[in-house]
Image 1 (cartoon, rainbow over the protein chains, first blue to last red):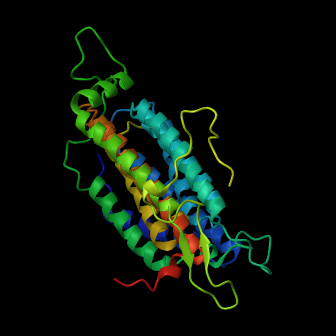
Image 2: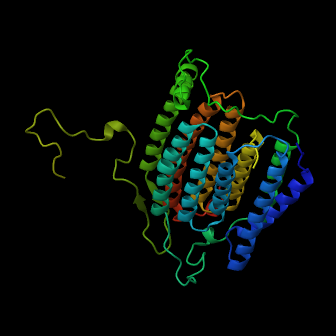
Image 3: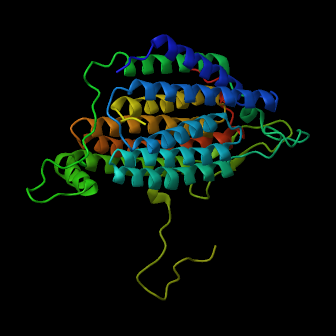
Length: 292
Length: 103
């Protein structure tokens, strides 16, 4: 075990921070952004090389090619999420990062979590994000130069806020975290996972459940109340989201425009459910929805 | 090539978390800000699953990741509803448009 030098970690974090500052959206030239990308890539490659050197004294394994591949894709996709000025592309790079994380989960014998991550994040949440991006996007600024990456974008997409300070603080945090993870780890805790997959403690002798079965048994035996509470939280969030979306918005008067515009769905203004008329009757001769 | 230890996964989780944090602070588009929150959630999820795997193959880490996904989904739905509401009010997604908010 060769301990990593904390100074080296900090230097790497500083270098990656400078690269990220150059990468964040702004009105600079494209060449500077490419230089920033190369700097970030080089910093991560050096860090990976140091990590390989770090575990040099241990036994050799064969699964680690996939780990390096998936983690590189996840991290570079994440960098692209925060560096791409267009929100739709940022969302798509986020999908890439999620897929790579799902690969990491499979390496950790968490097949159900990998599937859940893809279904929930890349399926449900990302579709919601893309819908909101389509709902709430302004038209392109007239007269903006086309062709470049930030051409025709609104100002709040094209220019980031305080990139130097944010990168300084963020990469200092990253340096401290990596230092704690690698240098301050208690000696002898380089835990090497056993080859066997996870087994539930509640499994019967002679019955070897796979990972998904073990997780289900664990959830419904040991975490039953928590699981039901999670379902309750989801229901409450759904009700809250519907309430928020139904609210009417009164836009204050603008000079030259209409005095007051009511936006929102055509539902009754007050949220009392008894004020919503209920149509329909048991008699099939009665029209379910009277005209007007 | 070498054997993977717990610290590898912790490092990836930490890096993802910090990248999400930087994006959360620097970006000005409200939608991208919440996208960066999801990035931070993802780093934490990798940490949890790795801890569970490397500590007696315990399943608690995966169970906590499920609860984390629940929280992330609720947060995304509520936050996006709020973002749409704010966009209707000011007709912009800029977070700076709300800088005169007080207390």
